Image 1 (cartoon, rainbow, N blue to C red):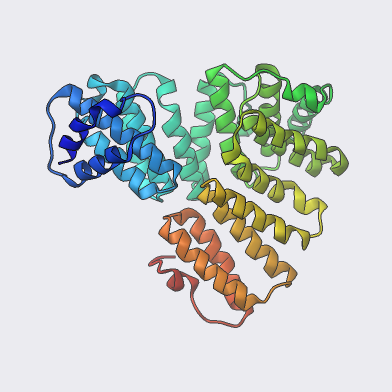
Image 2 (tube, rainbow, N blue to C red):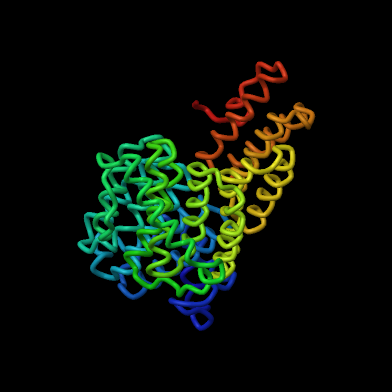
Amino acid sequence: VGLQILKNASHSITVENGSLPSTIFAALEQVAIAKDLTVSEPTLRVTLATLFLRAGNRYFELAAFPSALSFFERGLSFMCDDGWDLNRKITLQLHDSACHACYLNALPDRVSIYRDLVISHTDEFMDQVKCLHISILNFALAGKMKEALEIFFSVIMKLDEEFPSPSNFDRSLMISTFEATQNELNKRSPEDLLNLPKMTDKKKQWAMIFLDAIFPYALSHSPTFPPLVASRMVALSLEYGLVKESAFGLNEFVYCSVCIYHNYDECNHWMKSARLVLKKFKADAIVPKLEISQYLLLSFLQQPIQALIAKSFECRQDALAVGDIEHATFGACINYETIVITGTHHLRSVENDCTVFSLETLRLNQLPLLFFNLSVHNMILHLIGSDKDPFDIAGVPFK
């Protein structure tokens, strides 16, 4: 039935571009249900794989990660063992997308499986960077920092980045590197920064992505590590141009500057510039991520903590509005934790909100961030004298 619908609607779709009509989604749902369906004709196999990739990407945009993964894997089923020879581009995109979907569905072992499949079927390093990026996030979120750092330093070297090894981390290197970058940054006004061209060097673009990915975990690894990461991100932006990650690099650099020199007053205009960088790229979908980052790294150092309850709630709502479930969950956890610290809300009401949000987070399969929410929930339960287990409330069968 699905194949017949696709045949009848073939005039209304193109394989490469454009949005998919609702009839195509309905047809693909039918094909996905037919698990035993096999297709031997090569052109049809590539067409079906491509359509499942596009439909999976649409589910991804809607934060429907289980459906996205299901569609990516169904697309891969049409490429079989010879997919890399039949259409290398589509097969690679399906593997990368399935790897990412597994990470967001909290399936760490399957992330490694897809990463290994990509590495074993590709010779070009740049074909492997997407799954290696997901692997770093996957290991780091599981607390396996040794594995995450091994991948980071291996990748950063292959991207031709001159980044010091951990054995060379020391305070004098950190200070000299940081001050050199700060001197270069201070030569420019915020307007000069925004007028920088867009970065075009693919290796440098990926270096920025990997540096941004490792920064949150560098904070717990070594006090000299974060300033080196932030300095390199700013230096790359000044030399090669701007990418979306430049906003986060600037934000992280400001945070390190506050920690080292306590110069709060000089930071505000650079924080504003970071937001304007995202505006330049029309990257509205990741603005909540930056706002939450600025809240976590900087705002709490400058504002009364009571004033941040409303801000963290606003960040949560903004993230939900653009479908950023990950940072919406994060914003909610910060909101609850701030309320607990200040004692300005009735804790039993907050406890009920935690339960509702845990169930919603579980429904969205955001398990990595669910556990952070549950830890806050557990703290609230202790404060109100309850012996309930938040893991049981959320229906999570493991701790």
